[in-house]
Image 1 (cartoon, rainbow over the protein chains, first blue to last red):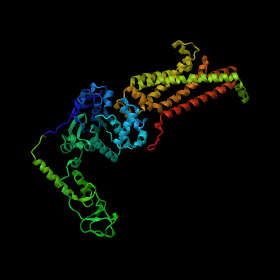
Image 2 (image 1 turned 90 degrees about the vertical axis):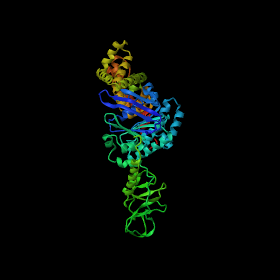
Image 3 (image 1 turned 180 degrees about the vertical axis):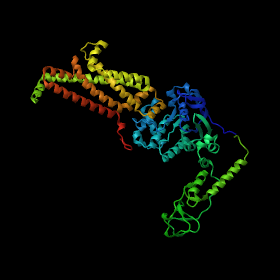
Length: 377
Length: 224
């Protein structure tokens, strides 16, 4: 059975865009975006993903075919009014340097004829929604960090409460750590505000992370595959997609394998600060007084006096019980003892897993899936 | 020449009255064309910046116009627009043309300097072209545009003096008179007042630019 679909809020119907010099940016695109989801267009540069996005708000007009928003051909709408009803976040934020942050965010309400007072009040509200302190509102964009500017860009796009949000490589100009924070924020906003988001990126990791559905575009503006991320990683439609998704896709795919069946083993532990610690043939997991892992003590170590953190090998990444298996495998692979530490939601150690256990679990899962009769696909 | 001579020239009430009158006339004849030229250059530059064929025509025309000697233009204009030969309107029209010719390049350069993502964002927010131009592009063009206006203001203030040769007022009158009577004092006073005017106008333009562009003098993280 194919997955049940919600309302199709944005539809591309046989859309082609050829430029005057003959290059085809988008080639016969047929695609529907479900209301209330984040859909990602991903592909190498020159694959037509941004061109496709810009056809939704008429920044680019198709050569042939139709683009529908909420069932209406966008070409029947006045471009300026259409755009005021569709949020847009651009790469590098594209904030107006001559206006304060508050006035930047108030842009669309002001264009829509709101009073300045009401528009600014709405803008102040939105700063809070995107997690910026109120005093930022009085500053100019040049006074903000890249990450803050992107947040302002998102706030500006949301100001008139549009049902559709277009995001054109919104986070590609910020560093990886900030980017991850912004992606999480986007997922949080989406779950709270229930917008329909069309998101363009060239980064497959980002696509898989934020997208509920991902459209992979190939060079020449051809849609190569349109699927949910686990499907995309597990069953690329062709060599182009397999290649684009990359050689880590098997590992990435673990992000979508539930870790509920994982049963961590017990492990011998020792508390930091305890005196007269002697380890045997096994690594000892060192915990603090609250039971949070601090590191590992090597086998056959003799510690005179209280155990301090200096004597410990730093631990690997931690796997939180119940999250997808990717974290469990990473925890095992990055741990000096070869055993990954599993913690509960409060960060307290509950046990350890080996890479072998994770792989066995995967094998069992795969066998169970194959035993099941073939479904709709 | 001695300081006495200068003192005698300045102590005469009729001379002082003439100085004030010519100075006022000079301000009028140089600044009104500056403003009018700017008003002509902005829409021309807007068209030139958007449409390459317009750009070619406008830039070509501006270059040719600026090559015509000012005195020739002062003399030819009455024939073209039907004013009297000694009308100060001739100077206003000629200097407006020069200003526009100078500034149209500045306007195009200033609009080119507005970051692409900013104009794209404005379009995507739902600005119509005219409002986008007036409230986004033009304010952002002010820093580069001001540089052009400063050059044009100095150019105008010096060119007005030439008008004295065709009988219009301004500080140039002091030069022609001083030359005719072989009297150095009015020439010296004329030069000093011209320089002073140019400096004051330049300063005023810088102040105007600064008050229009508070966002250009910010440090990241500061609160203004």
